[in-house]
Every structure is written in structure tokens, then in C-alpha cells.
Image 1 (cartoon, rainbow, N blue to C red):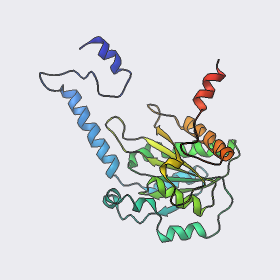
Image 2: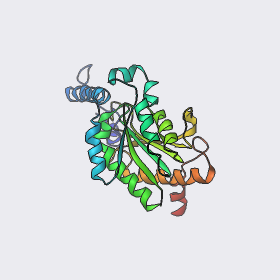
Image 3: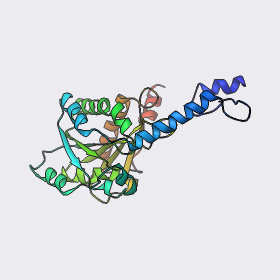
Image 4: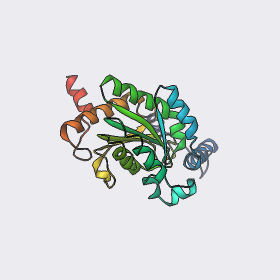
Length: 250
């Protein structure tokens, strides 16, 4: 094994410098790859226990609101992405009655393509977001839990709650280096029909290997403030938190 490759191996989760046994991978590297592949498949197909998550939300002192898409099961979710972008009729009724109180942020949580990510990081991230909103005088609505949702399902939820912005916490597509990554997608003035170019994303929330909960919540507060000031979100709204931190340290 080349020592330089071994040093690089310590800096990344990418599968480099694995060595070889004859013309094949060493047994340990092969087994590790097979485990990662199986974990990624489990993350996609595992159902989300939304009732247990709702109990966790209540334990944080927050109010959960259970909503649903027309998706029947995980198999249909994977085959029909369009169904994961809409609410069923009962959920639309829940948003209308009683009329929602005024709020700045409609927070939506869904398992997306990784229920594992929500099980590991969902509640701590929700807690960090709620704390950051409270500290910055941002009014947060109920925590809307939507099993088998896609990013765009935050549009009808945000519009139904008359929120200024919609934020969705979603399990990201798992890979062979990470099966538990969460993403946050942010949309100003949400309404059905918004395009992905009108959203901002904070991705790879999965401490300690990825972004931390409080760092993600701080970025969300920054984007919310800037979207209020500029009246937009998406490609025209830039996250300059790192640039400001660098210039402040000069």
C-alpha cells in the first residue's frame, strides 16, 4: 500500500486506497461495500413510523400536525413521484379548519428517500430549528409530518397555512458513503407550481460526518431573513454565511 494513498484515505469516506488481494478486493473492503449497499436499500424501502415521530415532537413541546399524500405504500412512492408532491383531500381539509394562525415558517418533515435519516437525525434537527426560530423572533407553525412526501409537497402545505416561507426536512437519496443524510429545502411565498429553481437547499445534515444541527438551523434563519428582505428564494438568494465569517475574521 502506498503511504500517500493511506493518508488520503483518512480524509474522505470515498472508497479509495482499498488495496487488493490478487485481482480482487480484500475481504474486509468487499464486506464493507456489501453492508453499505444493503444499508442504502434498507433506508429507501423502510417505512417511517410517523406516529412515533409525532410523540417525539410533542416531547419537544411542539405541536405535530399529521398530513398525508395519496401514496399507498413505499412501492407506489418510488414509482409515482408525482403523488408524493400533493396532499390528499383530508389533509387539505385539516389545513383549512380551523383557519391557521399567522406564521413566518411552515415546517414540513417527510422521510423522502431515507427513513433512516429521519430516525437518526430528524428530532434533534427539528429541535434546533425551533430553538433558532424562537431566538430570532420567527413564528413557527405546527410541525407538519407527511409520510412518503417529495420536496414539492411543502408548497401546498405552506400555501394552506398562509406561511411566508415553507421549509421541508427530507431524507435524501442514500449513497454508498451515507444512508442517513437529511436535506432542508426552503421556498419563499410557497404555492403549488413553484419550480426547484425557486428553492434553496441546505444538504448533508448528519453530524458528525456532515453538517451539524445548529449550523443548519443558523443557515436557515439567515436565508429566511434574507428572503424577507429581498422577497425571493432560489438561485437569486445566496448563502453568504461562510463569506461573512471569513471576512469578519480578518
